[in-house]
Length: 421
Ligand SMILES: *Cc1c(COP(=O)(O)O)cnc(C)c1O
Image (cartoon, rainbow, N blue to C red; front, side):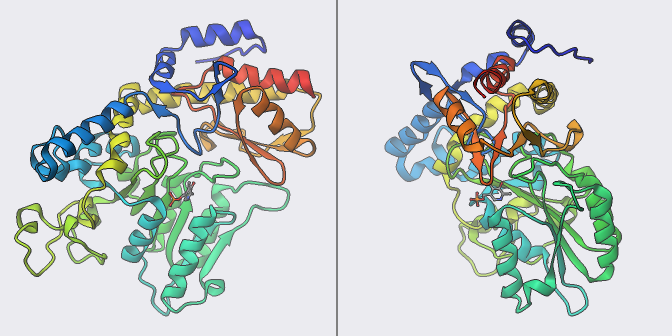
């Protein structure tokens, strides 16, 4: 599909009218600004509330009120199987078998648990490769994991830095470091999309290179799940984890999701920190000694399903599933390309788009580095009812999530930059 973009409101309006996904914005609550819906470009941080969430909470509250402990077996959605309800939609989003995904805890906790399963340092093979400038929580997790094994982070963690003059990495650079580390490499733990630059990495190629040196490939997909469709099973990714409050719109602190490849989940001898929820259901309530893990990713579940932390997730996934991640991605590419196109028309402001120009190397988000007036521009946006995110030293992250953002929203952002600065 070729788009001859135009920097006009009429064009943007027509694009919205022709957009088959435009209907989905009516399924979300928008914060209000001067009596009108805000334009919300912060879905990469906290997604909007789906309108079906309130009803979903009411259903579970009623079950608790009316059935109490009976809710585990006889509720509208028996709580005993709550994770099961999420698996069909989650597996489609990440390109996995249902047996390869589950939900529990939150993202950083799950990264810790999965890394403890997969990272088995030996004197010869112990190094971990990450992208430089990874999300701080991931940096802390890896650093403390390494110390937990009595190793020195400086000698163990290899951070790949952008080459001179660049803000992003090339796939070649990443695979070169993997090759060079060779038999010393134990694990790659990369963000799927770097939260700051918005760069989407080539997960398939990174995984392949990692396996060529017999190491483990794990990914943090916080900014990817619900943003870009994946093929984790076919790419043979070993493990991945993500949160549910960004592009999955499941609300603050919602239960996180994770993927473990089929070849590992059926291996009962895989290391794990276990709890009764990962035990085979047929023997779980016999309360006997001896952990018998479920033969799928839920064999890593530990505690009783956190039903209220998964309620909005279940509701939100119903909407995302209806919209279809492939259709969302198709719209997202055009929408973010339109934003990039509009920004290129601006001659009055000095800024740089640090996110890669190639749509295959980014999701919905563009990160804009304003060499001056960054704070001022951010304030003007908020004052105008446009919610965007600001990071020092002047980066504004703009993420038009295709589920509830449109072309006129993007146009309005451009218009404010054009007429006020
Ligand atoms: C959002 C995000 C987190 C947050 O982790 P929580 O444990 O859910 O607080 C961690 N890592 C990355 C890459 C993120 O984008």
